[in-house]
Image (cartoon, rainbow, N blue to C red; front, side, top):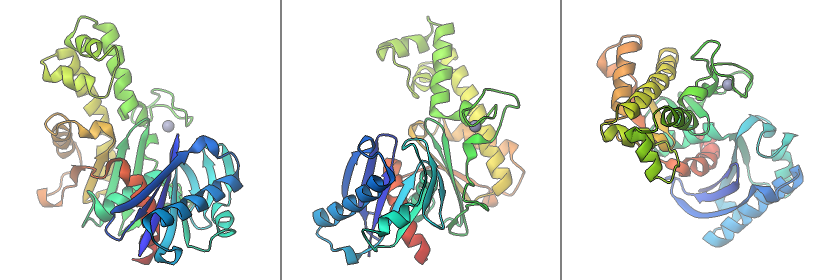
Length: 320
Ligand SMILES: [Zn+2]
């Protein structure tokens, strides 16, 4: 069977036709800005489904399910979008609206959970039974797989790892709390810390790295400066890894997954500079256990394909 996965991002709706092995056979995308009410969203999902079938030369009855991942809160059982920041729509009964046009089984899920499911089936979590993904981006997304299923909590909202507080009374977060992990360990937080270090030490190698990049601070700037022997760059990286480790160690102590995968642009950094120091910190500070039972900390493998593949596999997850 084939599966369709649709990733509703901040700018684009990205849809893909996926086979059992997670291979994306065809893709289509369109701007989210063109969708302005619940019915047009449902119709857009239907037309993306039909376009994908047409371009891949498959019929609708070869498609086991359509899955959709959205950034925000969803009610999985009824297929309802409760809240999503990028579409300014609330309480949209998306499955019901979709089924007005097509009878294909339809699943809805939070996008970070989709990414975790994709990595679990065909990425860094293959063979894992208890698996967590942490995606470092604008914020920090998280997905928890327990015994082969997405862990939803009582109300479908579990897995918001970015909003665990690691600094009591710390930086304010849009969620209303202070000191949330994503305010310290997201890619955006790393850029903010880097920009602040450049402002304080404009004559450092880090300052030169940023100047060579047209004044643009990236998630790589501090790591590049550290590679060139800069103590300012090194201090930023060490601080960042401290913050990252704080949240990872919390997750390991609470869930003890067999594997924890880190995704997002920052995770592409050389292992020697990111994953290895992180593993040392986790080993030193998490609750002691024998080496063969320790959580394996690895890089996520699917990059930005995880959203489509995970949404597509929502239907597969129901069948296994
Ligand atoms: Zn927060």
